[in-house]
Amino acid sequence: MVTCLSKAMLCRAVVSCWEPFLRLALMAVFVSSSLGCPARCECSAQSKSVMCHRKRLLSIPDGIPIETRILDLSKNKLPAVNPDDFSSYPQLEELDLSGNIISHVEPGAFNSLLSLHSLSLRGNRIKLIPLGVFTSLANLTLLDISDNKIVILLDYMFQDLHNLNSLEVGDNDLVYISHRAFSGLLGLETLALERCNLTAVPTEALSHLPNLVSLHMRHLDIAALQPYSFKKLFRLRHLEIDSWPSLDAIPSNALHGLNLTTLSVTSTNLSAFPYQALRHMPYLTHLNLSFSRIRQVEGGLLRELVRLQEIHLVRAQLVSIEPYAFQGIRWLRVLNVSHNHLDTLERAAFQAPEALQKLLIDSNPLVCDCRLMWLLQRRHSIAFGDTQPECSTTEGVHGRPFREFKESLLSYYMTCTKPRIQENRTQTVFVDEGRPVRLPCTAEGTPRPMVSWVTPRRRLLTSKNSGRFMVHANGTLEIQVLEAHDSGVYLCVASNAAGNDTLMASLVVRSLGTRDRSLYANRTSQLSTDPSNATANATNLYNMTFGLDLKTILVSTAMGCFTFLGVVLFCFLLLFVWSRGKGKHKSNIDIEYVPRSKSDGGSTDGAEQAGPHRFNMKMI
Image (cartoon, rainbow, N blue to C red; front, side, top):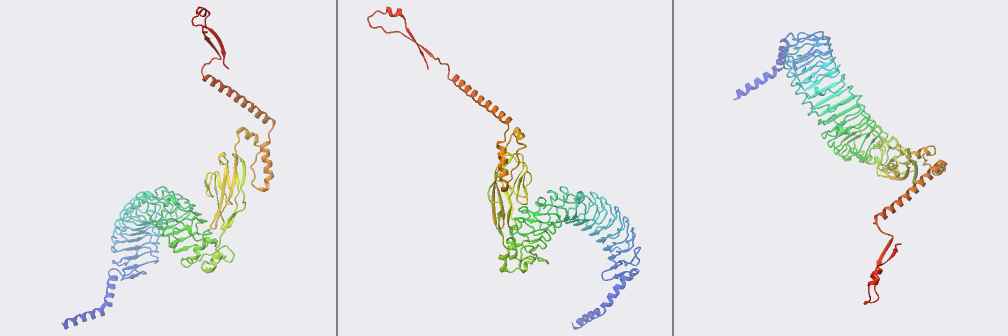
């Protein structure tokens, strides 16, 4: 037993002593298996790699070991890739040919590289990749053909790359991608299309990528997204649209069918938040719409994005984020609205402000008043990033970072004043039908009050309205073409965080006939609501009421006479019809009677001879 243990210990000692020599022997075998390491290249026996980066090689060097798995020939002067150039290295797993002057790759050039899983042809001068170039590369997972001169991707050019996971085809002169160019790429998960001459999304070509997860489309001159631009990409989770300067809108059905978790639409010409396009994305967690022209985030239109966690709107020209803008988003953790034109961010904008962990709101002209009180109270629990937000107005706090505010002074500086409308009495305005009118309503307060109007029919008018009714920035309501039913009492409401103030204006619209309009055309004008012009208004009203000429009087008299005669005739007609409806009746009544004899026993002969008596009665 002791003998066996001693022998084992002796063997271990011998192996430990000879281990360095064994490694040197293996390296010698690796180098001597071919012609040794190529001149000017660096070889590693441990990783079985040959690095010939930036060696000014004009062709593939001799002496590359057969067992090489990693071969770097980047930044040289190789002009082409011909068949059998790599047939002597069947164990190659990574091949880097980027940064050469390769202008063409012959079909079958990589046929012997059955173990290859990474191939880079980036930064060459390839104009066309013919069919058959990638034949036999069934194990390839990464292919980079970007930064070349490729104009078109042919049908079925990648059909043998069943296990390809990532494909880079950007920085080319691509003007067209054939409908079946990506056919066969059943395992592709990441595709980058950037800096090309494409003018439309290659929808049909992309539909052959059922397992695509990430799509990056950057620096393209695509002006519009067509309906269902990304159809059949059911597993797509990350979509990046960056630097499309001509894109100014996203149609409601452009992203239909996608179940994205990350959407980035940056450096575009978008002028409005794409609410409708995002409605059907309940799994969206990250949204980036930075570097655009979106001026407003309206309230209550993002409620369906219930899983949203991050929103980025950097340099989006934001002017306001309305209350309830993020209603329904309970898990919003990060909001980046830096470098915009926001003067405030109210607590009412958030569904769950306590969930907010990071807020980047620097480089905005913030007005430090009561609307920002909630944010200053949480300034120690919310991360503001590297740059602290500052107050741009209010004496005493101008330019002061949020973290320097003392708790005891918050109530002193963070104040608001209730709105006050300058004109405090009811206005009455008389205007002819068809003319425009302006009803002023100027309000003061801190913060600046928002002015809205309520019509006699209880319709709310704000600055968003367009058409006949417009509310200007100074609060004035303009009705461009008055109609008779516009008459009534209009209510101006000025409101801010501290309260509201109201003012009523009575509008009387005079409805005139066609003939009357021609008579009054030179005499009527819109009445001013300025009290200083009261005398002029009274004069105009007098002229409009009593300024009648002889022709007008004669016409009015004639019309009155005709009306009176018509009424009289109508009354006679009614009497005639009434009398006729009572039936026939006589004005005289004849009554006959036989006089009675004076004695019963008297003879009746005389009476009979005399006959009956008759008399006449007239009805009055």
